[in-house]
Length: 252
Ligand code: PGA
Image 1 (cartoon, rainbow, N blue to C red):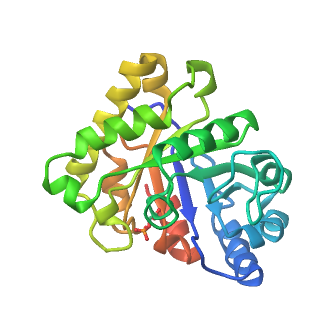
Image 2: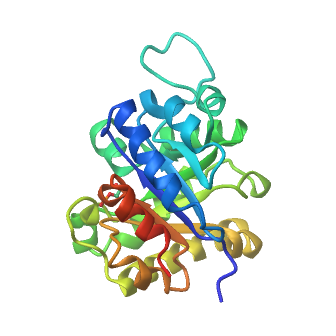
Image 3: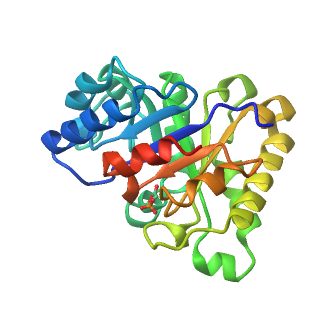
């Protein structure tokens, strides 16, 4: 039996205006009102955060951001800081998503700085890791993850990590309709948990939540959640629709 509380998180990426976001958040809030045993998070765009917070703040849905910059304030045109996100209701922040690594030059080092900034501000980081298609074919999955986890968490100590969530998202499964099989995902989740144990001990490796991401849908979530080391999901496409996301939230 897993004793970790599941987290189902929706990453809305660069979709929806504030009005559209509010509409979806309102529907979702109504559909998941009765859910008490799963943590739920949605990450709208920055411009929709304030409006969405108004809708969800008294219900079970919590708010997350998709990115942050590690300085608290300053002359950094176009960036948003952890304290700013916290001040508009964010509880979580997605960090190091593969799209950020692929299109916006994020590295293990910048990811590490962002995780540190989130923790300092008491934002819960959703730290994304995952291998590309090429890396999997070259049988480098485990070495890539080892490096991403080690470098991403460098310099952090055990008692800073109790709110951190890891999201395993094989890059080849994101937005492609190709999901890792339950066994493929479980194998990697178990490996990531063993890395956490090796670096930080088994109290953390037993309690840390490791989410799976990559083409999660209402019809594959239940089987994924049966795996012993899968504690939830980071959902892209299927989180944009309140009905399909709430079905994922109610996976049982
Ligand atoms: P997807 O995206 O569910 O659309 O594959 C997942 C993600 O990028 O977090």
